[in-house]
Image (cartoon, rainbow, N blue to C red; front, side, top):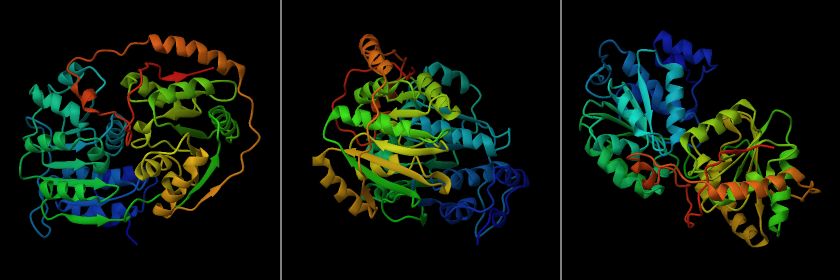
Length: 444
């Protein structure tokens, strides 16, 4: 059985991993770390919650800490150093995932390994200032990276190590032209790692243009869901009963646990969070329209337990690693199988048990049963419990929130073309955009 000791890591990195309780790599880590350390390109398939972030961060840190090239089957790539630009680039589809990756990097890397996350929704001047002394690692969304490349505040000519995380999601969001433009700024001689939840034909075509004789690390074939998640669904015909059922399920949560509720459309997130914000639950909301500061405040409160529930679009379906999420509730049927799997993957993380629940109309039930058969997931129909009454405070807040939110205006971001490119468009959504809000959370 493989352990982290088998990779002969530097003592500093081995101690950091051990301090976090990691002694044995996950399957994707066992498959990808060794060839990545040797300098090979990697094409990896891994489901949500499988530990893929460390699968590409550990080789990156080894590269940075390596004093001189080692000899394996061929000469290993040189160690990183401060140059005219970053030595490593990690592409991510959302702000939250970019921030999470950089947070994990700082957790395990030595202080000398400098890093910066760049993404839309924040003033670009902050990134201009931070890039005056180029960090060794850049983690960013494609739109903001192109903004910085276009103004020549960022150069990628010294990049030796490239990672594209959640490649399937980036292609679904229409990032392929942006990715191709970014690749055009990279040196031809580099090491590239591409991670994807599925190996669609588009991923294979992208791999052929980015990778050189890659090692294929396929841990999970096709779309799959973590095995420790139980799946169930309710059939509710009326909209008002759906809201009351969500409220009932949130009230029944064990003390100290958290829930996430997913909606397809942004205006439904705002409306549902306002309706739920009452006696028993502190409820936050996140959509692509919220500013980065609002989203960070909401996520910080959710992680700290000041919010017990989070209502969101699919912008929160990936890139959030928050422990102890007891249940995921789908307020309606997701539009794609991938969306369903990644929403469900917010619970049951790190081999813990979790629950995902759907609230369906009678018409949606047949479609859902087809979906779970295709995914080879066992789901059972649940009896609708006695519905708890909605708190009066929630109704009053709803009226006030609707009046306030309809007057809210979206802030203007200087040179923030990344927002127009769809860095934060909900995954898999093809519905018209409703009017936008600026509220990030609703409290009683």
